[in-house]
Amino acid sequence: MITFVALSPSVDVTYLVDEFTEGGTFRPTTVLRVAGGKALNAARAALVVGASVRAVAILGGTSGDFIRKRLAVAGVPLEAVDAVAETRSCVSIASAASGQLTELYEHPSAISTAELTELRRLLGHPEEAGWWAISGGLPSSVPVGELAGLVRLGHSLGQRVAIDTHGAALAAALDAGPDLVKVNRREAAELLGLDAATDAFDLALRIRSATGGRVVITDGAEGSVAVDGSSRWRTTWTGASGRFPVGSGDSYLGGLLAGLDRGDPFDAALRLAAGAATANALVAGAGVFAAEDATRIASEVVVAAG
Image 1 (tube, one colour):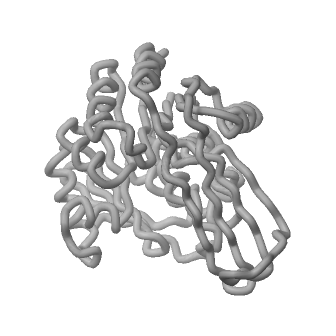
Image 2 (image 1 turned 90 degrees about the vertical axis):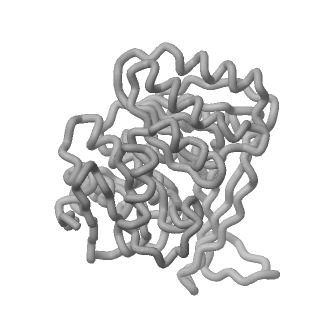
């Protein structure tokens, strides 16, 4: 079982347009709305590739109601904290003419102390040992140390904990020893105060020295690197990369945890992660790819010892 903890959910809206330029008026050819934010995208992706999942999210207002309904349709079990603040929306505009993606992301909605307390209560009674996945940026109303506290709570309840976030919350969480840190190259370099051109394995090893756990660094079309104990892995795929990258990092995390949760070797889980991430980028909408695409791509992914 993988529990996805959503502190910054959103309604993710994708507009497909023939062309887009600043200052113009355009009518979308397609509009997609999903129950989003990093954690919920990852939950949906993990479910697509066969994992047993649940989501614990803080949801408010009509946007929160929309997310509840869409998760139910998708088959993602949800335990929700009722929030005072309206859940945010995030918009992506994909232009067919340029192939470019324009993204407008609201800041995460505020969370009160009482809502955090209720979130911890919902998390405090896991049905079985498994994974917690805490992903996404933290609202400014949440104390920086809250993520570290959730990692420690998960460990106290016999859970393995994966985190995918950035900034001060990520830095504070390292001392809690998450079992898996999954970040992109820019986030890793920012965390360590290094240039983004720094060797990705070097970035991963530095983070592992602080956590003692597995570390994965994704790097867009360049693939990903991972460190696991004394082993290093580089994951690459040379096929089509797709033009809809929104949610691919989340799908990567969902696929990776799906593999690990069912007991796959780490290299096999990395293949599934890359398959899910790439399948996601082939179609519009985060975490709505086809399982057969992810499986096919995973079979062609190359995972080599670094």
